[in-house]
View 1 (cartoon, rainbow, N blue to C red):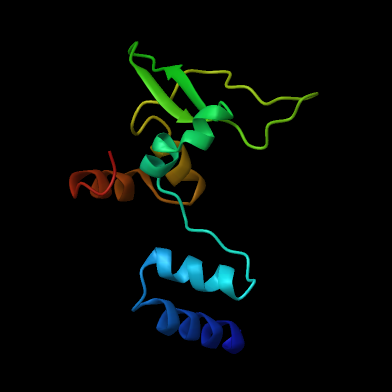
View 2 (tube, rainbow, N blue to C red; view 1 turned 120 degrees about the horizontal axis):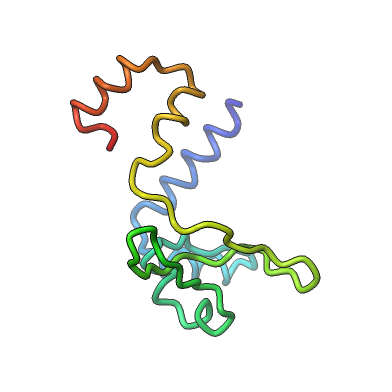
Amino acid sequence: MKAVVEIDQAIGEWSRPRTVEQVLADLRGAGVPGSRDYTVKDISEDAHYRTREMIFRQQTRQGFDVEVPEIVPKRMTTPGAFRTPASELGEHTRMVLESLGLSEREQDDLRIKGVIA
């Protein structure tokens, strides 16, 4: 575990003063595979994702159209599929927090503090 921390620190020290573009160029130049992490915005605006039909338009329960990343990997013989409309904000919060052992009172406290919806 100590080695992992040391490697992470070394990578951080090396990459911190560089831009993402500089880091990727240096990696390519050294023959090291790498790519940047994509945000949701990056994915939404990426022409490659659009061309591969990796952005799915789905309707919420309120009737609004939203775009979400498609199911990955795309398989020809057994493709994944969205079976229900997009969840509402906070729709499954209670269930998830209960599964983590938080009491109803603890959840209410988090809701009052604005930590959860």
